[in-house]
Amino acid sequence: MNADRILISGAGPVGYTMALNLARLNIPFTLFEAGDTIFEDPRAGTIHPPTLEMFEESGVTATMLEQGLIVRRYQYRDRKAGIVADFDLGALKDDTRHPYRVMLEQHRLSHILRDKLKAYSNYEILNSHRVKSIVQDADGVTATVETPDGDKDFRGTWMIGCDGGRSQVRKSMNVAFDGFTWPERFLVLSTKYDFGQHGYAITKYIADPDEWCALVKVPGPDG
Ligand SMILES: Cc1cc2nc3c(=O)[nH]c(=O)nc-3n(C[C@H](O)[C@H](O)[C@H](O)COP(=O)(O)OP(=O)(O)OC[C@H]3O[C@@H](n4cnc5c(N)ncnc54)[C@H](O)[C@@H]3O)c2cc1C
Image (tube, rainbow, N blue to C red; front, side, top):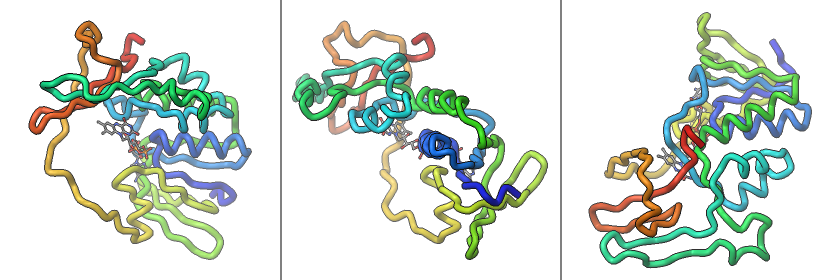
């Protein structure tokens, strides 16, 4: 079915970015997402100048700037000694149209991208559809997908793997994921406490042999 279309596995920020790019080129696609909705757990929160430039043409940047916190300065601090370096991204004003970072939760970017897709047709987004395996032949690909109604095969011209670090698409291609796992466990905490009253910039990285962390401010559920 739908053999003329591109298949995308994974509707994270990368999958939605790919989807919007294809929609803007009027290339039909089907996007499979294992989850039933956009995950809203705290993950990436910083958007850098090259990303803002990349999303300009699609109008995504303008919406990110409306919703996010624009940050011109960020700090490196020693946990005990205080500020080590205080960077002013305004110094990049001759190099980029966006000499700042934008603090915006990753899931908000996914929502923005999904909203922008509403201006287009000729695509489908299937939540609760987990890609289990992909087989390629001379004419295209067949993906076996776990759906709420059981396993189904979907046919497409290409499969684009946007399904994260444990990508099933990568595994189906027998591509290794070299590297190592850090021994530390990372804890993510959210608080409404205002660290700004202690002289902290909106974004800072705090060094310490034992108690290091990154401390960032994001819009949060209340904006
Ligand atoms: C705490 C934390 C902080 C971070 N901070 C930053 C930061 O400040 N800046 C930064 O650049 N990055 C940061 N990252 C990394 C960033 O979150 C990832 O790089 C980003 O999520 C990658 O996006 P993605 O779309 O490739 O993958 P993901 O966000 O992992 O999305 C993959 C999607 O694919 C779906 N999926 C998986 N398998 C299948 C399948 N078989 N079939 C169908 N769907 C599938 C998943 O459900 C998911 O929705 C952080 C990560 C964490 C955990």
